[in-house]
Length: 249
Image 1 (cartoon, rainbow, N blue to C red):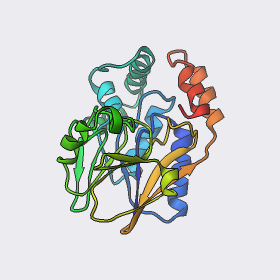
Image 2: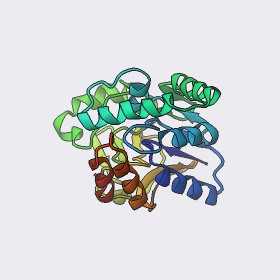
Image 3: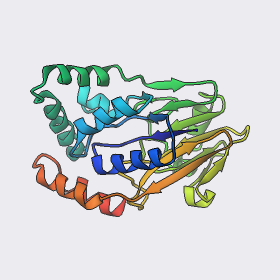
Image 4: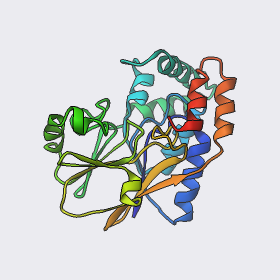
């Protein structure tokens, strides 16, 4: 049994609550699908926790943007990216600063095991291709190519919307599955949702717990108001990055 988290986005309150729940369940191994930073007010603290607590972590588009350049970001996301980069650069501890940059720079784009493939975005474009629930209606042909890229299971994040895609193509939200998806021989793409910035109109943190027989979607309340206040106190972070957390959007 292990946990998969994604899209923490510098939200320390959400991430610490999720890690506490993982510990409460006695789960030893955690995999992170990327976007540890970006948007939120505690990027360095979240990165340090991922480095110490996660068995593996992948490169997300915001992690990539902080290292290199933000690509196709809106103004709020771009400003948050440059602010995040500045926080890393301003750390007076040279050894710690170098270790964080090295950790970010060494993040792989794909994790492959005998049981599953994991990426931040999609198995076709692992850092920045979105797989939206509406795609099953608006772009069904997209799924033919995507499902060809893995053998059985693929875990993704990136959209901040949890759920399961099947080859149909079909999409099932966690509540439609009663928060548990049984693992069979059927191919599936499982979006684990977002720890730090859910966008499915549910403000609770989202992550999954994977066992031999099923995947459980977990939703968890955290002190969202504390995070909102932190965002409001940082001039370079758009207040919307805080207020959106209250509505899960």
